[in-house]
Length: 372
Ligand code: NAD
Ligand code: GLY
Image (cartoon, rainbow, N blue to C red; front, side, top):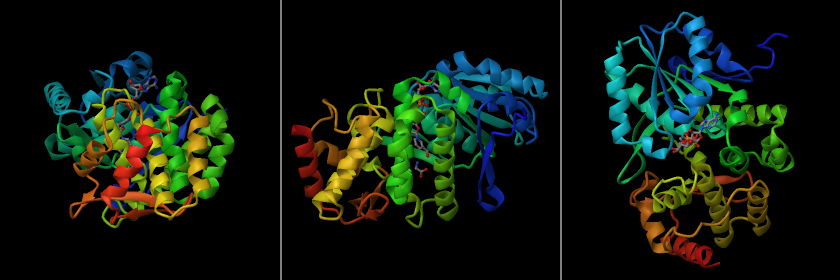
């Protein structure tokens, strides 16, 4: 069988910064040849985390060696804490020590944490070297590896220091998802369903019908979910690469609430990013219903879908009070002219950016959610 036959390629059209997202099973084995075709200079730097290294680094390095590339791994601790100044410095120094030149390349082999961190190191290394994203979580395959947003977290909040730095190539191997824990798979699903909630009600209905089977391991359904999500993201990124026209901001559905919940818990893994997005989407629909914008049954559908897949739909204990959460939203990136920007919806598939929301309405919603 032609190993390339089940591969789906989604082009990201950005003029000189265009690249392909390649999706399929077994891509790790082809990674070396596909990366060698980009002609990286010197050693190939590979950033990964310890968990991914144990599971997939050997295969990846073997495929690089078979293609004549000398891969130098830089293994970092797993978890959001690696998206920090400390590990930005650590990875930068390791890359410099191992040898780097303008034509060098850094590969991000891992989830969104490694992708965002390595992408930011690549963006600033020698004022910019190439990065290839090899996402190993569902979340990273459908969202974070595509579109060039790279960042680290700071004391003041999440993703506050970063850049737009498009990869040269994204290789999403569906096979690596076999080792991903169910909780992480579910968290990735939140970002998949989000594309339906934004502007694609038919895809949300497809998610409702197929989500359980896809998470249970059906490869064809997974491939469809990943490819459909990447195509949706490709359209948004091509239309608004730097989030300047408001189109890309729609991808932040669920994130204003979600980031505040994550920040209140200290990014320690108590709440995964995708879980926070699931809760955030539920709250964004609740707020839309309260403001008379969306039908109540649509908010119920959103909550029912996430709950059926085992995702949380309400803020967990320990997130603090409503006033504190609204204050955290105020220090997020999603603030314009001093006002918190929300993505709300007129119904499933009808999301829009709202800049005039009264914080008192948000506090009231959160108070009720926290005491329910
Ligand atoms: P992650 O990178 O922390 O990965 C989750 C866990 O899964 C880690 O413990 C990791 O070691 C493990 N893991 C990864 N691949 C594995 C595999 N194949 N098998 C077994 N274990 C594996 O988290 P994530 O959910 O992938 O990414 C979350 C991050 O992505 C957040 O920091 C978020 O801000 C960021 N993000 C960025 C964007 C963007 O556009 N840049 C978009 C969405 C999210
Ligand atoms: N994940 C949000 C974005 O890429 O814009």
